[in-house]
Image 1: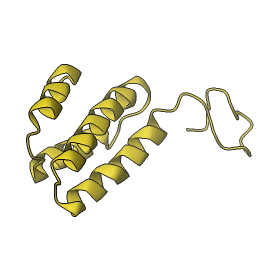
Image 2 (image 1 turned 180 degrees about the horizontal axis):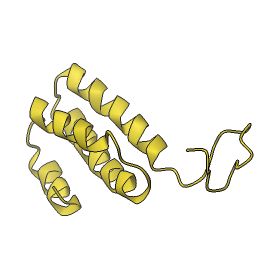
Image 3 (image 1 turned 120 degrees about the horizontal axis):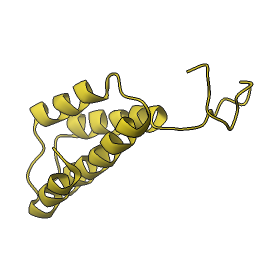
Image 4 (image 1 turned 90 degrees about the horizontal axis):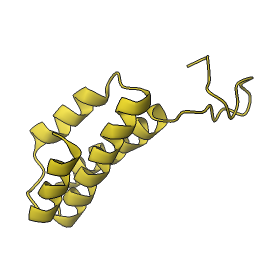
Length: 93
């Protein structure tokens, strides 16, 4: 699903399905960098849609956890203050 269709779904307020959340989780499993940033935007839109349509709290919780992990994977710079690459592109990841 591309970003434009994700926005369209938000507009139409389609309910969130278990399969949709599972697909997002599967796609996020091994992503880093730019691909993770793209998926992060999609997860944000899906989470907003889930909140708006009053989806199952378990699905909302899974989307929230997924957003945290995708956000961490999408970071360009190291945020570990003990790492020698702090605030630069980390070679330890």
